Image 1 (tube, rainbow, N blue to C red):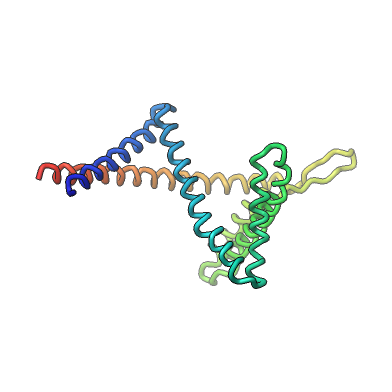
Image 2 (cartoon, rainbow, N blue to C red):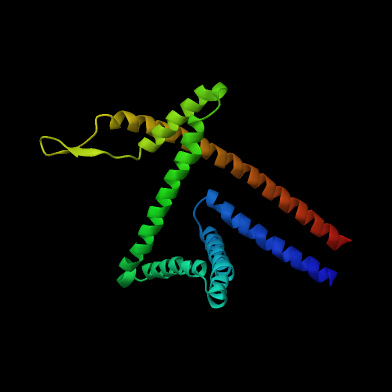
Length: 218
């Protein structure tokens, strides 16, 4: 039994090592092994997400509908209907019906994001303590510039042409600079994290293979 468990562990470890090598092979060039590993990852992730959705969302929802027929329970019917309508996007002939759910999703998501940006970023930076007022003011201004970059205000001039507001090019340039710096910092952080994860992954395989060989020889 111990040998079988050891061989099973070695098989799983070898499979993980081969999939890791297949993913890293993309550094050289795009190849079938990399696409196979990515397809397996997407397939397994999608299958896992469906199982979790059925187990943690739909199953408790249907149980509550059958057992507790209260007002709060029937409120869950609304997101359930929107979810079912969203599934019509999978068929070209009925894809337009899914725009109802997409509109609600984008509208609610945008509103939540905007409220979060104002309440979680702008207001705390403006209401920061006095000793950090200057830094808070700078951060607040940069945040406003970044948000203003996505605000498009155009009017029809006397010649009948649509023209942007006179202040927009200056604000747009500042916002673009802030966003570029932020994305550069995020890219550097992602690159650093990727290198750390790669190092940890290599150390993991070295340690695990050493333990397995040790157990087989003993």
